[in-house]
Amino acid sequence: MENAITTALSKQIVLARALDIAANNVANQTTAGFKTEETRFSEYVSVIAGAPSENRTVSLVYDQDTYTDFSAGGLQATSAPLDFAIDGDGFFAVQTDAGVRYTRDGHFTLNAVGELVDRNGAFVVDDAGSPILIDQELGPVLLSQEGELQQDGAVIARLGVFSFDDQRALTRAGFNQFSSTDIPDQAIGARIRQGFIETSNVAPVKAMTEMINIMRAYESAAQVIETSTELARNAVQTLTEAA
Image 1 (tube, rainbow, N blue to C red):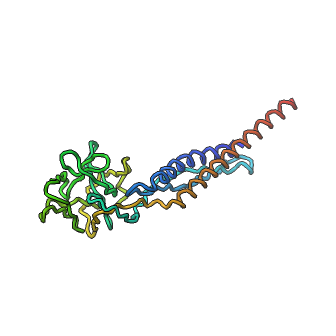
Image 2: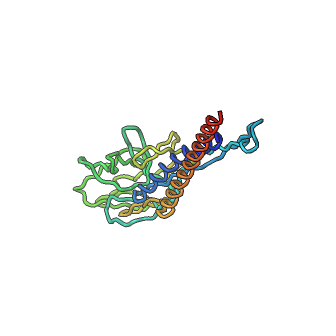
Image 3: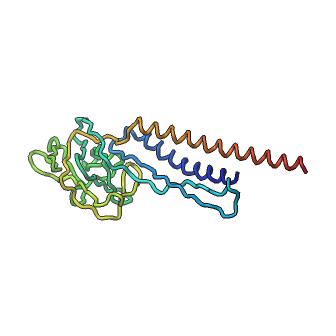
């Protein structure tokens, strides 16, 4: 019975973490540029020498790691001149108080002094890592597919789009951003679309189904614990009465 309780508890711990991840995916299914997070499960099986045959094997479940699905989402037209989407590999870079962060969310605006910022107020940087300043008096901003920002027929900056040889080096840093200690390269071959944003790559039906399955598995593990505890209680009571 102890083995059953131990196994069920280990499963509940893993499922609780998986449920948090699944719920976060569901909550961000409409967040621009959001990337799905997944969990890999593993099972550890141990054989206890000398134990009765029915309790000799103990199976513990644990989450080996989590990983991010960096597959592209769809492109959604917004017609907003400062909404940009990357068609291909790469990330926009923004300068935050905590350092440079990388994101696929290209919903940008201008702050009070005309600097291009993301929805959190972080500076969007150019290909050299510097903030991008836009003078609204020069007229509308046009963006080439290569990332050149133009006003009044002149190039004012090149939007920074960066790529990583190994995307596993990217760590979630909150605010739909990633951090990395690796030095990125300039993205090659990526096209930038003006007036579009990239949608989340969360598959809503799949995410909801996964969340429901996790909740059912958690309830099943709870039932195992409840049943095992009741059996142990009845066994103690029986032994006490017999004595």
